[in-house]
Amino acid sequence: MNLRNFPRHFIPLFALICRLTLAIIFFYAGIEKIINPGDFAVAIYNYQLLPDCAINLSAIFLPWLEVFIAASLVAGIYTRGAALISALLFLTFATALTINLVRGLDISCGCFGASSGNISWLYLERDLSLFCMSVFVLIFDRGWRYFFA
Amino acid sequence: MTKNIFSQKLYPAFREATIILAVALFIAVIFNSFRSNNIPLFNFSSAALIKEQQAKIPSITLSEAYDLYRNNKVIFIDSRDPFNFEEGHIAGAINIYPDEVSLHASSLKTKADQGFIFITYCDGPQCPLSKETAHALILRGIPTVKILVNGWSIWLKAGYPVSKGKK
Image 1 (cartoon, each protein chain N blue to C red):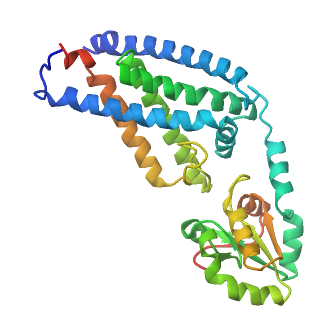
Image 2: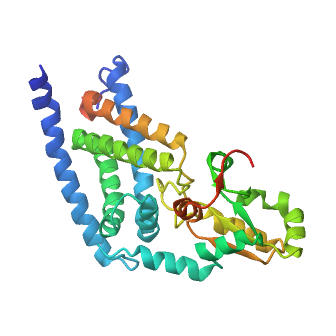
Image 3: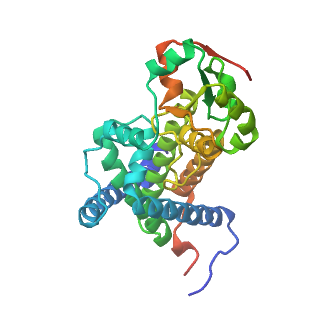
């Protein structure tokens, strides 16, 4: 296994860093929520955006989706698909956060399970930064093959 | 050029995303059906949740709270952060975040001895701040504490007196 083009091209390297950062964040967030689906359902309910019938399904599905995105991003398999879902997820989270910040609700973020802090504009900035990273990965990622011959 | 980007990047991305979504949904549902602390797929009951919360802590209804307010027998404690408090709060309420209870304990105790009831509130049915402040007050020897669940929203909705600013 030989290192090729490393670190000559900055953009693919930065895309790789973004990809792995996103993977770590998604993995941690997903696992925290899988452990306690009931608490996460309550966190979703507190956002007051989804009907009751959609809350539990979201609480079951979303953590696993995050874990699968993390796995895809690390393995470099279906990376573009994972980056696309990641971007859409962060956009959704940012919208939900904005709506509730404007409403003035003082609720738990639920971002990393039940023990997350309360929502604030800082969390919105974090979500938007992660959204930008996802878009960057979607456009510029070259996969593991670019670095390893 | 646009067509090229779509066919090269976006179309495969959508196809891959669909596969990831389908696999994640399948695994999530299967895992949930086999785990011990599973939750039903569709039956989330917000009414049951609020009932459970109210059973655990002393709470008060909006009409009872308003009656006490009119008779000047109550002190409202806004448990939200100062920023939200300044944007709007129940008229006459004081802003005490759960961590700050110890700073106000002695003055509140004097008020409690005079027969005042304390009602804590924050915003949202599951907001933990009013509960935390209430527990902190009880811990410091102020027994006449109740919680107005989802207090700010329902008070505002009812059109009862509110004020803005630091006081």
